[in-house]
Length: 178
Image (cartoon, rainbow, N blue to C red; front, top):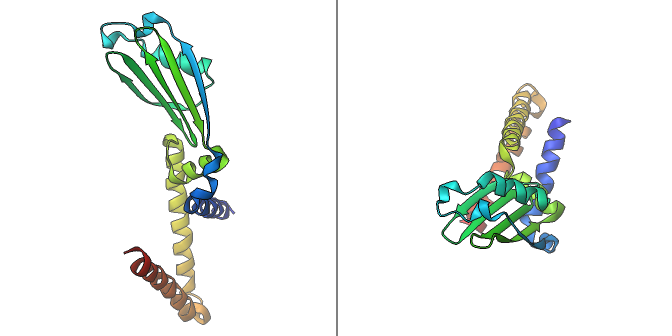
């Protein structure tokens, strides 16, 4: 049943990914503005910018739940990006004034499950889950092939069906992809 749940999840998300244009209208963006402590951002030495304080303040005061993915500092601006499955938040902070513009974008439920399918912005835990799922599904597939060799009545027909499946995938690739 674990394999069923995994196959079902990846089958459904395979369809939603293949027809992403039908789910594109679920994108929702919110703009927010604010001001940070000038001591954190307005320092001539970029090594002394209060990165942790900036990130945690943005996260706490703007309800950001995703992990930080990027922090860029230049002479006039600091950019902070947070990414998670189906979610992104990007803040641009003026180093002279401490004022920032934040854009939070959510792709809705379908965007979340599509990113989970691809393992995008999901972290190490989900990456391990995908690897375990792939190993489990490989073992289930191989055990099915292994069992086929012990059922004399179904052996030849099963191998023919498996070969036809491989041939069909190859033909689709050769005709429509290559």
